[in-house]
Length: 203
Image 1 (spheres, rainbow, N blue to C red):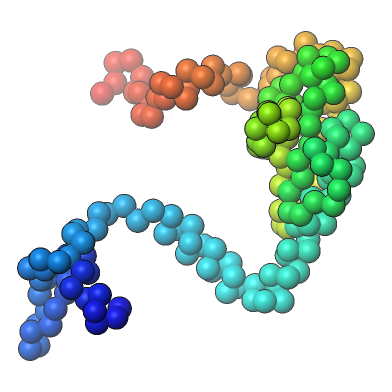
Image 2: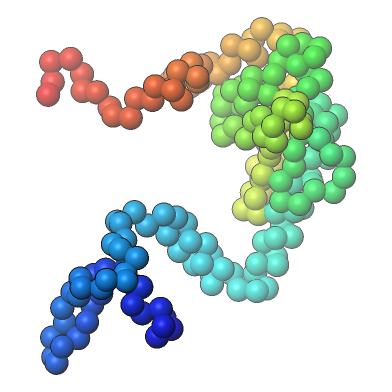
């Protein structure tokens, strides 16, 4: 902190008086009190820890793996889910389910829901926005995924694409294996239930 900025520090400021410390609230030029909310501090600490653990050589290696994984997935799935931009990608690839939507009525969200039945967390859907990439599927395999996991994911996507051609209604009804089937996502976003209600008869 430069000396000329010291009067503007948030209050209270810890000041030393002899052998003791006290909180000084009398700062007329202070920007005020900082609230308890710390923003994304936890994310920043985790990111910093990851940087320290890997070091410069390790970061280069994990970056290469992330790029390799994304391009591997993109090329393997291009037949069923064409790349939004057909060129070398970085750590994530953007595919489109538009051919399935046009021919069989199976949309990106249907593909995402179907993936849950195969034990995979759904990728980001509809981003980039539909005006940019219709029926977008953004897949970011990261550097930590093994080739075996990537191959299993690719096989699941291929199976979904085949099912979309042979039995599109079935894909639109997935997932079947999850405790909760399809939710009304608009209502969930507009009227979220943020607290677990106890069963009837219990406080």
